[in-house]
Length: 403
Ligand SMILES: [Mn+2]
Image (cartoon, rainbow, N blue to C red; front, side, top):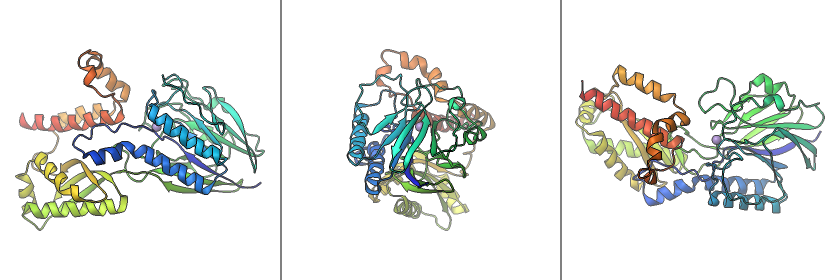
């Protein structure tokens, strides 16, 4: 049987708002706000240039259930471009852009097939024969039940691909949706499993391939590194996965060891240099910087320094760096008394397990307050992460001051 070539992508999260980056220059802020669209443009450009047999998008095309007009418009334009090039697209909607959200519908061109809320199988005609593709879209936000039981087994004739937006049993880094086990997927006898939902790129199984391509653009400090999609060449005997990067802005962390100097300007130079190396490798970036004093002199120097004003100064000195870099967070490691007291650790441990729904339950009253609500941005994962980090900082200071 002739080999297939297709694009597997997921979690585009078009229109992600990127909250909690106050202080960022206007230019950088725009670039960040545009980054999901820039990544999407790269996906479309690559597809037009290399003309695969088809494209699979495994859920979370939009970031919000309201599917912003701008995001829908951009997506629709991208699909039109693929339509003109004769490239079919098969997609499903995920927990972020489930079918019960309220949105002004855009009509997608005829090359696009979208799954409904029940598992079904679509027969996609390609020049290399008909490909069976099974999948479903989220009918509502919380699809917590297993959907895998509804997928039909393949009889092994022709190619059969499964699309599934959900979590593997035991995976708790994202909210658990439509759970499955690896064995359940393998038992369907498919040639490829195109997964979505987990934003970290990973291959769960080699043969048959069970793959999360990750998201195409990191959205906060916990989604670090280069992001993109897979260009897949599939035959009955083997699979080749080629990772194609799309991310326009990179989240990352750098550690700067300090020793052998006693003046602040030397420290600023060392950090700036490290940031330059980082952006040379990754391009535009938002990074967490940790300064590690390694000798007495550095310890003393940093001991006299207030972290907030050091951060402000470092942000100023890094403004000149091209491509731009934004210091998201500054930590001084092992600084005197910077360790979190045990009670704080306990509290943070508890909060770290909260999911978005727990956060929403906690701040419910504030969001319902008619006056306060007007000033609040919608609460999403990034915003919750931001509050979590601030809480940790506050707790540390509060507990240390109280001895
Ligand atoms: Mn997602």
